[in-house]
Image 1 (tube, rainbow, N blue to C red):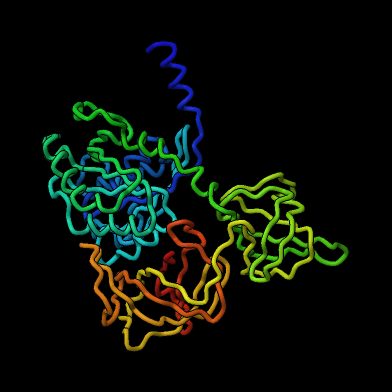
Image 2: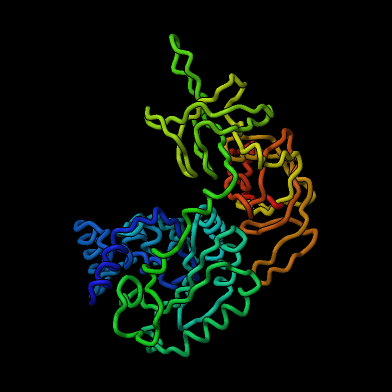
Length: 430
């Protein structure tokens, strides 16, 4: 390796690109858990006692090699059935980036779990079994990732070792996937052949896929640029808590998480719903004063003026404010096992950022066939996992952005007042 190449390699190893949240999705037995186990194992993110426990469990099953899928399939029911039935979150890091993985279920009846995992994901890894090709569940997961605004998608064609590492198989699957997904206009779409079981092109390149010249899966994940996406949006600061230490002090601050944008000390802000404008006097984090906060920072704001602000209010960019809405058009994924009858639409509590208001489903406008993307107008109702366009009426106004522009202020959940169960996850249309 040349001196220049060695310098570039060391620079890449020490560069920190921040945290990447990604989901793995696919049909049953496409190898999602094995893939995550391979990532954890080959990046040295597994403790020795964990690896020893997995080795013992593999031996009890009569397997000669370590079953890396057991590193993620922690639920006893999953181990007995050999499937993943819940969203399992795992964490690992490389010198270039930290990662949070959501391993989402493959069964169709757990589609709602995939919605949960994808709602906060920056990227999606959609696995395809090289022997089976593109299946209905592949199309379903790709469609959900698109609907939920996941802009970075990697299609991992797994189990290439079981088809003799045949490039023609990979090329055919790539064509089939593009045949339906090209309509989505995914900004960053990549295809990688691999074998999670053998480790080819997951973390290391391996020797069996020499015809593929692109990056490994890990390298592709490390390269994804997401840091500036939330920072570049108008700032939105939902208030979680009003901080008043107690008697003997006149300190009053507003604690929360800056969901988008950049907020500097001295900046003018708009308080909603009051509509009052003021200036940020100080930004406090862990008893330290900060000159600026960026998207993702949890801070306490001190404002120059005494304004009536409470939990659920929103501090926003006065030049690019959110829309005040008492009626919203939205896409929802129905999460409840109870059928939603269009003739008896219920009231519910709508939770949006830190604000909760009473809401009424006014109409089911259409149901989305997530296999074909066709809209079926005026459905009779919604079953669990159905996605539909709906209209909601709100008892009090919310301050919202379209989900396509701002995922934090464009999303919500619906909660059944009687049972306190979350019955739907929603995305506000423009």
